[in-house]
Amino acid sequence: MGKRVLPWAVLWCVAAFPACGKAGETVIYEVRGEVVGHRFGGAALRIRHEAIPGYMEAMTMDFKLRDPESAVTLKPGDKVRFRYVVAGDDAWAEGFETLAPETRLILPGSPPEGSEGGPGSAGPDPGH
Image 1: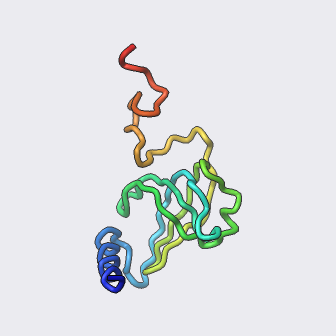
Image 2 (image 1 turned 30 degrees about the horizontal axis):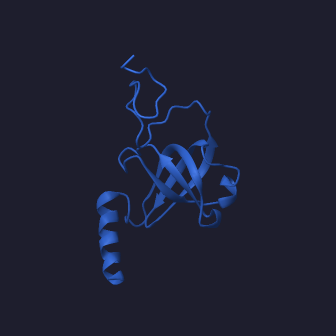
């Protein structure tokens, strides 16, 4: 079964992420999100990120770090901006910048821009 997973994973990668698998091509995306935590001994960061236009929807995923030392001070809940570099069959995050805590991010599960209320919201209660 394990040998069958790899071809499907590659096919999914090529279909879901257009830049994935194009040898020799490097594409850089500007990404904003919220740090969830450090992973794999600090070699990656799990980030809940906004949609990356033309590349992927908003989601929570692990980003391999080009330089793990560059993210050592980041902690869960920090809002960040960074570059996601996709170079052929490799990809990594770099250039982290911490954003102000009040920065509004459009993350998975967030209410639409300009809406009020909703689960976990401090917005008005329509029943009162």
